Amino acid sequence: MKLNFIVNDYLLTWNLLFGASISEDSYNYKTKLWKTYKKQYNALTCEDKVMLSDIKNFIPDDDTLYNTVFETELFTTLKKETEKHRLYLMKIWDSYKKDIIKSCQEIIRLNFDNTYNILVVHPSMDTVYYDLNNKERNIVWGRKADMKDATATLISILYTVVRYQIGNQFPNYKEIVQAILELAINNELYTRLKDKSNYLAGDASLSFLKRQIYPYWLMYLGATEDSFTGYMMRDKIAFDIDKYPVEANLKKLDLIQFIEFCIKNQKYIIRINQLEII
Image: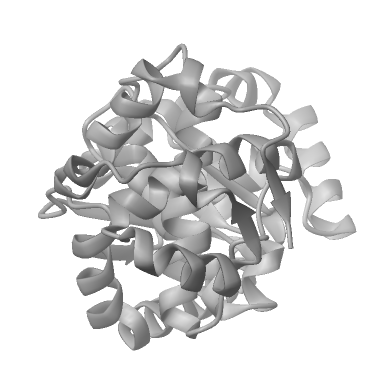
């Protein structure tokens, strides 16, 4: 797995023009530009999608607005701070890279030989987006929360990378996919990196579904009946061991195959009122 952290002037400018205003000065400047270059401004509305399809070779058909922005003190400051954020994200990645690659191979078991471009924008823009329909693996990234918890930021980036890897394979089962991705990245990977269980964290709306999948998730990780109790105590999630005979084949699956297993067997995986937090 390789992550490239990149600042692209055109993409940064597009997010300045069309994203949430990061300051009163940026809002006033955007308003002024829109009034002066209304036709050119409106013509750029969807240009970020074109950029994401081939960011390395993107050249605008009309660079009037871009060049106007590039010459401002606002953009100079914006780019300087964005570059600083790029270096911050790179430092986090470099600190955990070896452990993450090893853990991902053990947890996810998918081929991560691809390169993913993390297109960094200013954290005050507070945005993350990507297009699963293109093959360029470009992810736009810049969040206010990035500065609060370095590990959580990295986990969020990896969640997005794995989501990108899976793509649109299960469009009718988004909740199951999201629940399993949380178990894999937000919970298990985070737990291994910090050596402390993080299994009660995540989207509250997925809590019930994750708890139902949890016994099978442990089997996927290679847990045996003798080790179930240790995992339950670690993660503060309980289930009746006698009602969950170990399916040894699950530990031979990769993450996509495990998702397929859960989708195929969801009628008996979801057992109402048989799990509780301890």
